[in-house]
Length: 422
Image (cartoon, rainbow, N blue to C red; front, side, top):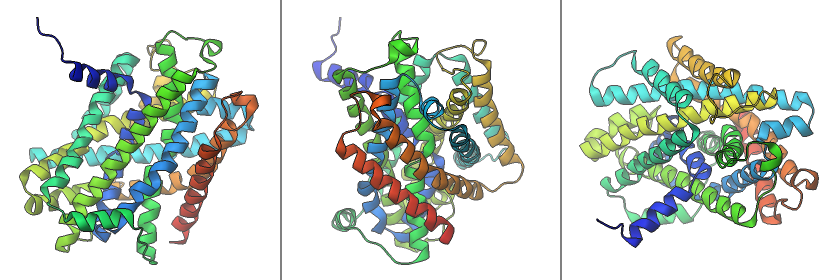
């Protein structure tokens, strides 16, 4: 009988310990995010690479607060907003989240369809419905544990973008300089790109998803009631910090390499005006070779299979918690039909946008606008909730996390204002 080597055992145990943080970070790099980063690298080359390092501690702080909120209170973000703030605050946040997510789902389905058309050479209107129905079926009929494990393995598809960058043979001295030295061009075009990067990276749907998934993890461990879930041990919080930090780092590494790939190919060859990830993939074929093109294109499909259920799931959690329905992927549809109905309707409405003639680039733009409007006040709510002793008990934010959260809120507010000005 063959024994598993200790090193392999360690790797498997390390990966199995990762959960909501890893999935949330990977879901951040959905097809819409890939489009944003591709446009950025093509338009401005290596100069925006510093934004990956800059945004990493900010998004990590916000997601850590969301994770801690779910673990300590035993409730998701929407449920906590409902308990501690006026109804209009809750419904404003939930309404904007729903609309932004639906536009994002439509853009992601369109991106996946375009990618599969490029690979197969068969442009068919059935791709988007096929993806939509398959993803909803997976979430509806599989158990939470199975869905979580599928999501974790889907994160591996993002390594396609790390690998692709090495096919482009970048000049590493220039790459290192652009990474470490912030560069800002005082033009409306560059500012619009910064708005897009921060709006795509620090997205409200991730806040709702992170807190809800921490609750799901506790349910999966047998803590079915709120009383059983309330509170968290030092070991649990430490494990969550590691999970979230690794997930956010993974997200930013992928973003970094997508910008790097498109900068060293498209921008370097004068192809600066692309509109989507599809344009980037098509342009990569003659410049970076067949394998880079295939990795980039298939990565879009893999990230969409992870991103769309997270978008639809965060919508369902937001609505279910706001209306006190109760919602969990660990229960079957017959037990929580309203929760699953919201999830399915969100995907269906995204599909409707695709078939109504909405351009995927416009859907991405509208989603970014709504996320930019919702993110700053929502971050403020998260900071206030997780800094409140009545809510968190002794598990309030540390000063570092709190100040990083406030910096993030200010940066996102500037981006939101800039989005309208530009």
